Length: 120
Image (tube, rainbow, N blue to C red):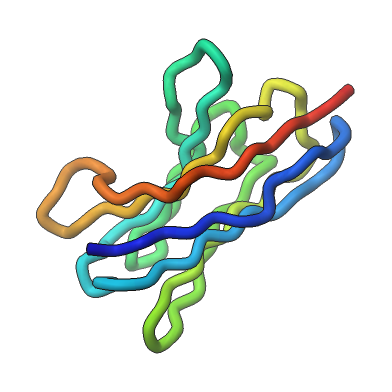
């Protein structure tokens, strides 16, 4: 079982930037991809960006050109970052870090979420 802990959310003005971090612990060998999802009030959770163990990235159309996902592999942990620039109010929501096991098509491990609020 892998545990995920997010950090870096907060309140930022439109046009600003922030970086979210997600650190793993536990069974890191069971991860072949990690991603960032977000959920705004009254909306479904949506994938923002993902990165595979090989470094292949994928972005939602709404954040392409404004977001960069990256990762750092250390001995006992993987840290995934989401850098977001030129933030818009519609980027607001709770951002969740997720991990996917090699034997799964879905992200099955989730962090507790971190709130991002973009004000005008």
